Length: 117
Image (cartoon, rainbow, N blue to C red):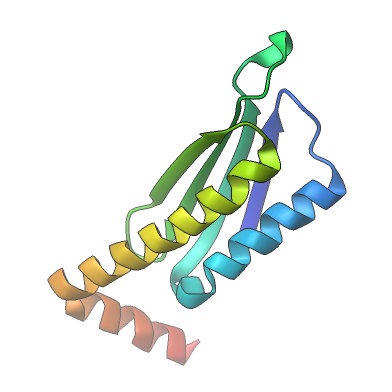
């Protein structure tokens, strides 16, 4: 799974990037075979004024399914990412379970295609 990370209004340091990607990969492990890529956008809501409002938006692109989007706002960047990552993991799992209940042949076909690769 590829994870693209971007920040707006502050610099994305190597430790912050590593922590972001590690946390997201951990929460999405269960559904990893159905995920093509994930986008993480970190931003400063107050911009140049300063302050402690940070925002994190995560978009997960699934195989043969619509993307799942989750966002959150907290006081610090490190404070938000674990919450947003965990919520995203639950949203992806719930989304895939609904797909399985409503369109079982679609997910079975995806599983067969994956095995043949």
